[in-house]
Image (cartoon, rainbow, N blue to C red; front, side):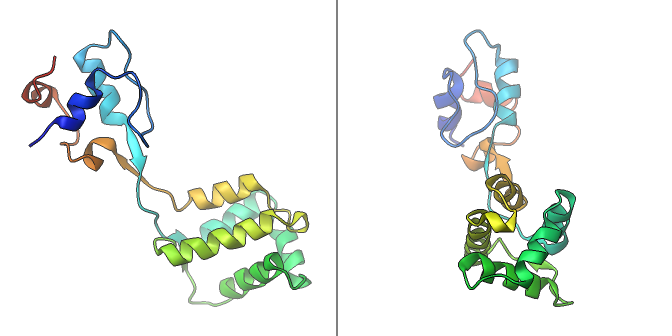
Length: 163
């Protein structure tokens, strides 16, 4: 096992590229460093999103009715077509999931949302787009993403020759 990623971050006070969490600080003990490093995350693959989650979000933030009204008489624009397609999908009894783990589907859903956010008549805002896309987001442990044991422990610190 190579501990190169751990060695590289052990004395750093900045998070590794793409990681989220609490940065190490000068004076952290090895135990404090382990706690912080073991909680660092990186973006994971997108996951599928249950259609009721999207529908429910829109209803809970008070946007569903206005979007339905918009879709009923939507113009022949990207946002109008996206709204009509969205409600057509939801009307299919067997439609349960936006398969956003598929990059093509994620891209199409993102394009729909961007079109809605770009048309003030839909009532959808950039924050709505972010919230809906966040339903597909996952994260994973930074340690796993760089091939380290998860979680790290004092034995790993010793094996890496760190203190």
